[in-house]
Image (cartoon, rainbow, N blue to C red; front, side, top):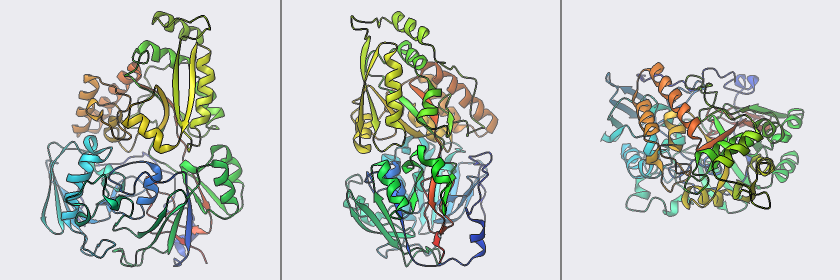
Length: 527
């Protein structure tokens, strides 16, 4: 197999086994049975080209394929593409597709589907579409089983994003000539993956069933997967302990329960690599006084990250220092401006910014939006509210369901501050740039919802995406981190831990480096 491509190692070291239960690899996979997975809310959509919301991707990753997948080092492996080559100048990528993939309705999957998906869905609507694929000049389909990407410039990060995370392929015959964002198939999808859509009872569950014509021979092994919607964290735990749920994704696992779960018999707890997600305090920079960098600096000095880490995150993960997570070692810059807890300094800066206390001691009021489904967001908000009260900032905590929160933040831009966790991986050109480049100020979830704009930052991110030399790329991203840490469009609080919990009777394929994008095509139940 010819596979010549840029290095795309995302994690310097991943000390996890490809199979979480070593003995399982020596056993013959058993066919049959069902797995019940907890989800915190209804999916926002079942069209994987429209969102990176975890409540959706948890489900769509079982039903759709991409050109490539990724191994435990983050390197590309075949999926719909059986092989690929990159030209010497890095400007042409040629994919050769498998010949036996078909859609769940029996239609063959061809290069026309790939070309259509990228041009009419991913480039236009995916939250990463404009930034991650900025280098792509055209997508060509010279024959039914060949796809050619022509690039404007070499893009070393491209392979890291072409999996189902931002490269899932849609059926052209069901989407062509329609509004992709409103197509009825977004609620009853037809994919090519190991499982096909069965039903969606909103507020209750989504069910998928084994695809008997899957192009990967003999897979999947499970007959059925059910995604049970349980918004309340306590209810999820009760359901898991009662045997009503078999699997808790990282975002559905209450962190305060991890230590207890680790002691349970027949329960596996794995801290997965994940996507370098950071919990952040967001500012709507369109609104005064948050548009004043001095006010943002003062807020940062008033927030005690250590207290939040201990009381809300239960010491899992790591305190964040900037916009790039420390797990992205090659690009991470630890030497950026930080804002240690200093109430006296915060008060002085707020006075200098003209935000003086009123008769009741209050300087100004802000709302703080959080996701009720988050395992830590609401708890973080309560701590931050108390901390900001010390400097005269009155915080109104507004817990919202996931869909409403994302609409408020990223579509309506109707908020003052918010707590939202965002994946910064697998490469700064993709997971980080989208949050800060001015070209991505658009009304789409998980983009530049704060409204930050700095031409120097735009230029640096553009250079970083184009630079083929790894050391030069790292230097560019370290410089952009220094600027962002000074401008402080967000306060980076906590690098998320990814505790994935499941019953030990399930073997293989339960956790991948791209946490939350497991296809579960290799998962089986020990008899």
